[in-house]
Image (cartoon, rainbow, N blue to C red; front, side, top):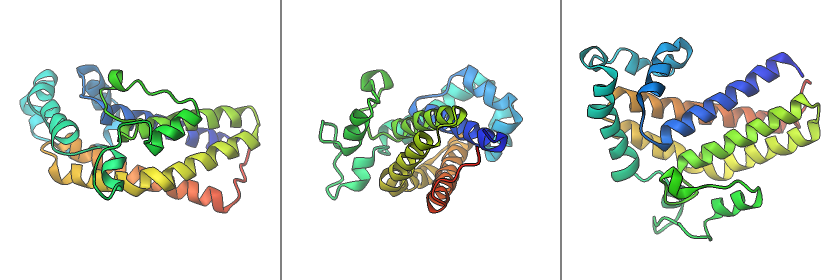
Length: 216
């Protein structure tokens, strides 16, 4: 397959994996240090890079005193990172089997261990991004095998899921995260996530308009 296309797909996979992980649970020292040591990754967090508290506290203290407290506020207590809350008129979360996102996951045998992931429903923002990660991985595999038909079907699925679900609510939630964040890290994370989601949807939209003509 075309090397540029391969590198683009790998980048999409890596970013979806990173965003899903960071929006799913609190930071640990290893993950934060790996972000700080990688200039390419740190570039996604420009405000955090210059955040004065990085000079005042070591990694463990930074996480325990500031970052994890902010995560708890933004993702567990005051804001609600679930699609159904934003999409239902009554703003009630749909945690049962009638959740439309859960139905999609079931159809594609994408299993979500809700208790292990510490989420209450499948339409959590991190789970939806993890689904995109899995679709992107499968698309790359199809492209590497020269199977443009399967790759096209997977790209169409990504486009539809983004259009009908993620783009409909995730940017709104992430804008709330930006406005409510108490740390530079989660401010940057929300900003980065919004930019990537919209740009990736634009990419998929353009691919759809061009009838998925891959340069293999």
